[in-house]
Image 1 (cartoon, each protein chain N blue to C red):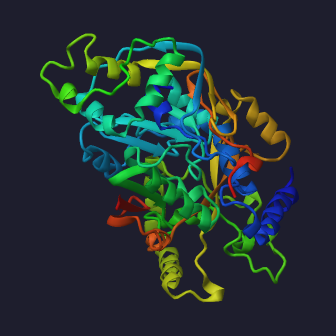
Image 2 (cartoon, helix red, strand yellow):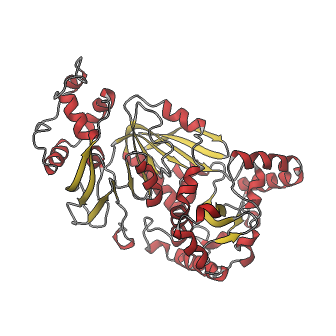
Image 3 (cartoon, rainbow over the protein chains, first blue to last red):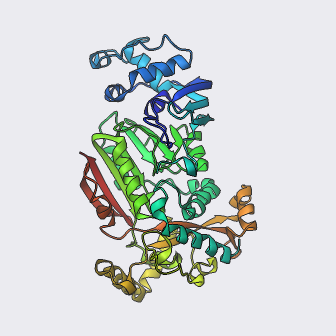
Length: 133
Length: 334
């Protein structure tokens, strides 16, 4: 599970108010390099919950990866942004798409319901008595 | 499980339907658990090995998306559309852990989740697709909820593509290979005043005449069959035209068990099939050398998708078409 997915996931169990953001408990994670896609990063930027993304990087033990405030569209669009190692685009790219949570748990902030992440895959299924009426 | 027990399982679904108002639309009915989720879990590797052809219309939709779009595939199966447009990013989910395992092994970004209850925040995706999923949901309310979920999770201006199997199959002989289910077994068909009645002979597996339903090879053979049997086609057409003029006695059959033939050599790989045979959930077809599983389908009539979305006011239909025996709808979130 990438942090992009974490930024989208919300608990929809009965009792959850927003169910967002899910607390991230990481047992194991890995990095897989992929080519940055500037169009994608610019498109997703306004939709991201930045504090949730930053909190996720802290949960991974990477407090230096992202700044407290999101990059601007101009920074992501700047010429050579995709090539600049350590620049805002590459950092965002790394945070969203290159880090994979392999083993861990997602915890609903409202109900404490735990969703396991196993072999890279979160299981968000609810039991019969947990769905909302 | 013998056929009487299968019957019993369905009756319990029927009687549940009577109390549907008190149970959540998000609670999965037994018929979907047994004849959709459990079956796909059992046949996943074989199913996946047969699922690689991409429908041109779905491919066209994905190709038309803006570069950099985030595409959410709800009910992604073996993930054959994930990553289809390399300029977009895809996240898939399916309720079958076995199918999701196959996607994950292919390095797709996936999770196990229910399309009727997506664990996503609102307005995040640029597009969402539901390919051959809604026909596995057994009530009108659940099919509608799944559509509402697709709309909920895309941004304003985002597109949703939905495809479902049509009653009006191009290869009309296929319907004769499916097992019609009693009309009155689920909440939308059930008449609370009458007890659920089922003609047992319609659901025993022995009545299934044919094999794998939608491979090109079979299609070709079926086309020959069709040519040699025009009378059947005419009869089928008459039945369909009745859908626009519903009367109690000639309501279009939309509820089916569609067989999946798992070759013995595939079945032996997984202990699930041995257990399924043991308890009667699946049957052996020695002639074909397969283990036969039944999948539940609600096949759609013309206009049904449009009817389902007609009460939804935050989306508009921007395209609708029939393609390869599927009804398809493209919605734009308003």
